[in-house]
Image 1: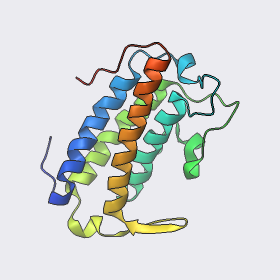
Image 2: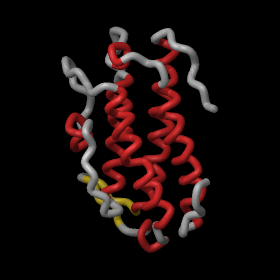
Image 3: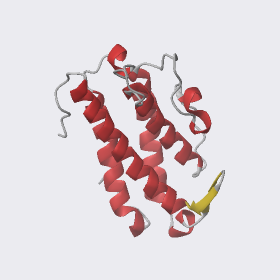
Length: 164
């Protein structure tokens, strides 16, 4: 861990956050943009959409800390929009650039967050929770999405993801 968080409640989440920051890049390693758009005759979300959705998740979470950076790839994911048929999603390199831009800024905000901050309400249409609960959910979702990308790697004939 780069820096110990102000809130002890965020310690393990930040450990996972750092892992996910590296794991996404590892999961995408070597995947071609054409393959990233393949759904293999299923209704499953493809790699490009999965990647974009977790990138958008970090940008959305950052807004809770007053960080209003705009991602290059975010328009297709506004308001938690699902995958759209017939749309060519941005390149994996573009998603990686957005990931690299938001990840250190959001990590600093998480590290500097007080218990009072993470106990603030987080409101979405149809639900309200504490910001801490949203951070935990987002962390869980990132792990889930990275796992999906790791599975897609194998389904598309790529080597297994490297966790080192």
